[in-house]
Image (cartoon, rainbow, N blue to C red; front, side, top):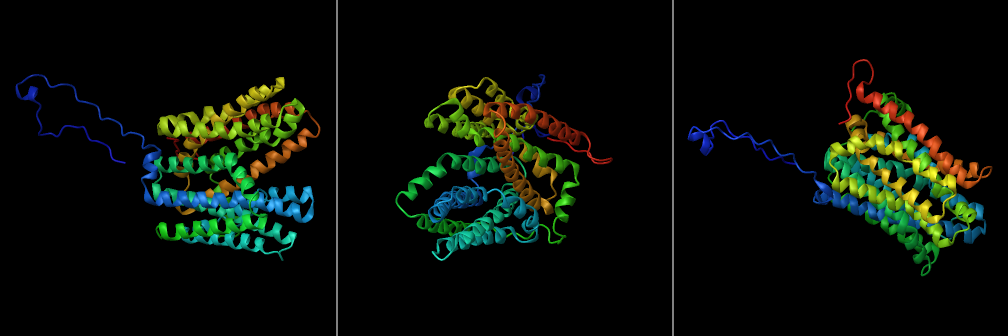
Length: 435
C-alpha cells in the first residue's frame, strides 16, 4: 500500500507566508485507506490460489457426500456410512501433528501440488469397482490427513503473496467465507449431482477438480524456497512451537471457540425433533450459524479497519457462545435461528486474530504453525460434536446447548486472560503487542 505524503517541503512557501501573513495550520497526514477485498483480488497470484481453493473445496465436499452414499449402497450399514463422514475430522489430528513440518521443509508450491495429486490419486482409486469398503475408508483417511498440510501451507503462502499486513487478513477471510458458503451449497450441489450420475461417477469428477487445482497452482504461483530446512523429531518441532507462550495462547484462541460453537449444529436434528418443528425449520437451524459467520466476516473485512478489528477480538470472542443461553427457554426455530446467527456474527474476531498470529510466528516456522492450528481447529470441532452427542444422551438437548453457553464462556474468559497476558509481556525479556 502507498500513503500520500501531505507534508510541506522545507523550501515551499504558501501564498500567505510570502506576504508575511500567518501560515495556516499544517494539515495532518491522511491515513491510508483500508485496502478492502477488491485490492486482494487485484493480486494475480491470489486469484490463482482462490481458484484452486474453489476447485479443491468442490472436490472435498462432493467426494464426502458421494463416498458416504457409496459406502451405504455397498454395505447397507448406517454406522459405516456415518463413520465415512466422521473420518473427515479424525485424521486431521494425525496429519496435522505428524506432517506439520513438511510445510516448512519443502518449497510451498511443491507441497501444495503434491497434496492435490495425492488427493486426486486417492479418489481415483475410490472409483475402481475392485476397491473394498475397508480400502475406501483408508483412502478417505489419507485425504483427510493430507488436508491440514495443504491448508497450513496455503495459509503460509498467502503471507508470501499478500504480505503480513491487512491484505493477508482479508485474503484469509475470503477463503474462510468460501468454505462457510460450501456448508450452505456444497452438499446441495453434491446431492443434485448424485441424481444424474452414480456415486463412483461423482467421485471421478472430484479427481478432475483436484488435478485442475494442482495445475493452477503449478502454473500460476511463483516458485519459492522452503522456509526452514531443519529437520526435527516427530512432534519435537510442534512442542518447540507451543513452548512460546504467545503462540500457544493464540492457538488456544483458534481452538477453543469452535469446540463450543459447533454444539447447536451437532444437535440441530434432535432439537428440531424435541421442539416438534418441520424439516424446513431444521434447515434454518443448520444454516443460521454459517450465514451469521459469513455476514460478520464480510462486514468486518469491508467496513472496519485493522485497528478496529484488533480491538474487537476479545469482546467478540467473549460474546461468541452467550447467545446459546436463549436455549434455556426452549425457543422455537425462529428464535433459535436468531441466536445462532448472532453467535455466527461474532466469528468476525478471526480477522484480527489472523493478524496477531502471523505477526507472532517466525517466518521459518509459519507453515508448521498454521498446519498445527488448522488441525487443532478441525479436531476441536470433532470433539465438540462428539461431546454434544454424548451429553444429549443424558440431558435434554436445550439444556446441553444452554450449558455450552455457560461452560464455553467461562473457558473463553480464561483464554482471553492468557492472550492479554502475552500482549503485555511474554517471558522475562520479550515485550509483545497486539497491534
